[in-house]
Amino acid sequence: MDCKISKALNLHNSPVAVILTNDIPDSGMQFKEGTWGCVASMMAASASKGRAAFFDRKTYGCMGGGTGLGFGNCYGDFPIDYFLSTGIKDFKSSIRTRTPLEEGEAYIKTPELAKKFVDSLPMRDVSAEYIVFKPLEDVTEDEKPEMIIFMVTPDRLSALVVLANYGRESNDNVFAPFGAGCQSVLYGYSENEKENPRAVLGFFDISARKYINKNLLSFTVPYKMYIEMSENVKDSFLEREQWLELNKRND
Image 1 (cartoon, rainbow, N blue to C red):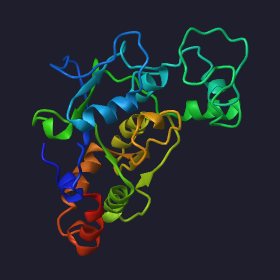
Image 2 (image 1 turned 90 degrees about the vertical axis):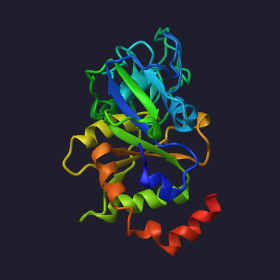
Image 3 (image 1 turned 90 degrees about the horizontal axis):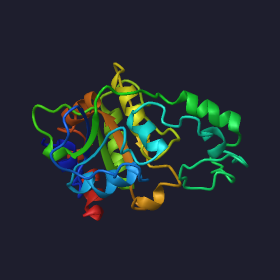
Image 4 (image 1 turned 135 degrees about the vertical axis):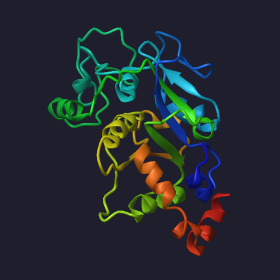
C-alpha cells in the first residue's frame, strides 16, 4: 500500500498497519506461548523495520499487552490497581512483572485512582483470532487495517499533528492518554468507531521506553482518519518551503 504521508515525511522506517484476521499469517515474528514480551518493542523492532509480527490469545507477551491489543481484560485477578500505584504486600502471584509487586510502579497516586484509570480503558475482546502488525507497504488491496501507527521523531510528529488538524473545523484532533506502550491500539479501535476520530500519541510508558529508540514517539491514526490525512497532503504545508527545509535535518 502506497503511503503519501510517509513520502512527504521522508520516513526511514515503515508505518505499521494493524490488521485483524482469522487466518494465521504465513510469516512474521511471534512471542512463544507462556513467555513475557513487550508488544510496543515488537512494533518498533519488527514491523516498523519491514517484518510482520502477530499475536493471538496465547502469545500477547504480558497482561497489559493482551489488554492493549484488544483481547479483553487480561488482568484477571491480578491487583493492577496496586501495581500501577502503591504496590501491595503479601500478594502471591506467579506473573512476571516489570517492577516488584510489593513496590508498585507509582505511575498513579492511589489504588483508587488506578482502578478508575483501568475501568476507563476502552477495553474490547475482538472477534478475530490474530492481530497482525504489518509494514504498511506490504498491505494488500484486500486487507483493510484498523489503524496505522507511525513511529516518528519530534519534527515529523509535529508535521503529523498539524496534518491531523489541517482539514478539520476543530483543533483538538490529537490526544495523548496515559497508558501502557501498546495501549494506543485500544484507543485506536475506539476512535475508529467515531464519525470524526482523533489520532493518539503514545509510547509514554516509562517502563516500556527502555525498549524504544529515545527519539521516537508513536502516532496512531484510525484508518478512516489516515485516508483523510493522506488526501490532504497535496497542496498542504508538506509541499512548502518551511517543512521541506526543516525536514532536511532528519535525512
